[in-house]
Image (cartoon, rainbow, N blue to C red; front, side, top):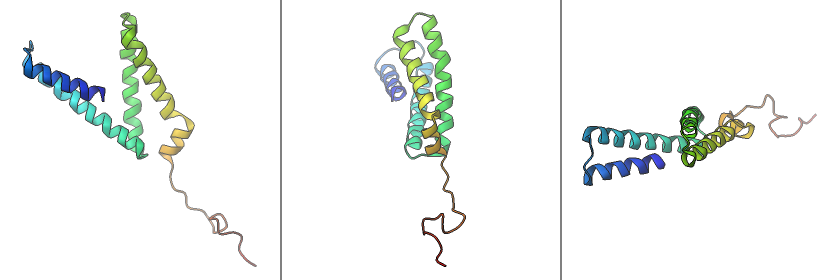
Length: 123
């Protein structure tokens, strides 16, 4: 949502303001809006327990870690600490055991009818 908001903000500022470089402003707008839409698709995939959604989420958080580290080193704690906390929390949650079982669960066929919950065979 933040990327979509940023893209909308840059688009608005490009339309009503006087950007130093119009082409760069529109490129940033397009990349932010595209990135935001992709993140929403990943979130929707996670909610639907789609297996493909885990990798983009992990990759996004792994990219966020060096960015947050750079912000911390430049003493921009207001931005670096929340970004680092969100990235680590997201990684822990998506890579935890219950999440892994939920996202990677496959329907297993029981080998015989006794395991299928039909009780013991009658003799």
